Image (cartoon, rainbow, N blue to C red; front, side, top):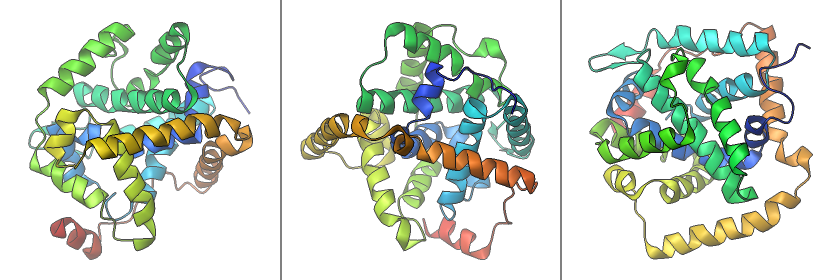
Length: 279
């Protein structure tokens, strides 16, 4: 198998191979849709509220394909995603807009790094710098020009703070949030409740309040205790357990690629439309 885009022990691989970073999935989604143009595109074109497992698979296929796939696999996944995004446009939004691509990529970088450090401790400044530069692949593979990615972590932090301070959450984002945390499949509800709790704890207070998510000092203490336990327990898990989701998704990506079924999605059904209208 041909080499991938990154060496085996690259910081971006060490971060994204960890199962614990999946705890930031809901947080990343909510940060993305906090941007009004992103929320409108998601509201009009995505069916993840009815098919959250499939949509999560699509996102993780993208992330794992770029970080762990061969060069050929990474390019194939990126090419398919870019082609899909040509259809995602409407009044006030376009998935090919570099500013929106940058924001989506920024949330993937931020969520992965934050969850890694919460569970496994801080990366060194050098590791963080390298991981940050490598994370530009999330933007460029979407079609964003390389120079759009802030040139340093300091510039990224300024960009991130500026975006959070200026973001005005709209009704589409609030509807998406309600749908996301009220899945149609009852078997998903325990997992979704945990994702909702983690997302609320990770969100900036300004965004959390605009999305209408409850928080309190009691919930903050529970959140802090959870990660205190996780920092003690999670690093003791065998690496085969900690990397199981990454390996499973890569296996699934290659299986679907052999069948020429990467990112194939069904038409929006009446059930999908009803769930959207209800929320």
